[in-house]
Image (tube, rainbow, N blue to C red; front, side, top):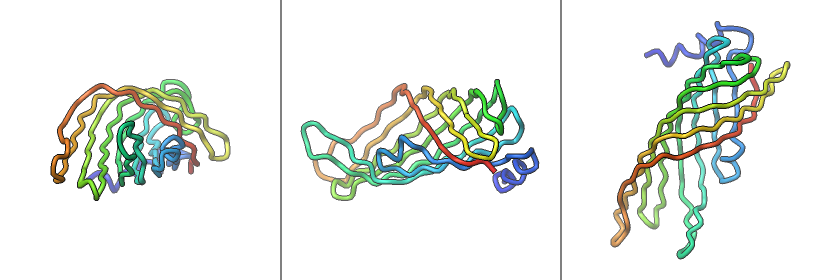
Length: 170
């Protein structure tokens, strides 16, 4: 119910209210991810992420697998130096959902995770910025297949993550 009002609230917050960016590391593995950061105040922002692609997984003892994939994520960021629009250091919480599949293997993999992030955003006077973040999270993984003899199951673990986004703030 509040979601449609988020962009309007961000626009009322200040000069640069919304930042659009793309993930560089995810592009290397054939995933296109867009991040939209809503800068509500100098000290607080929220980032929505969404992506899709077809990464290839290198398997040592079998044929490599290319899977279709999409993901969605959410970050809440608190800026403790600088500001959300002018750049600075931030920390916060992140959540992510990923779903991927491969038709010939009748395989579906789902991942859901949440964790903490730290990062830094370098913002330039006229709009461009570089956003670097990393952290650790706890994830639950599940693989399902209707193919005969396929391995399926679930697992959970702590995992690290890292991202570099480049973009433009308006």
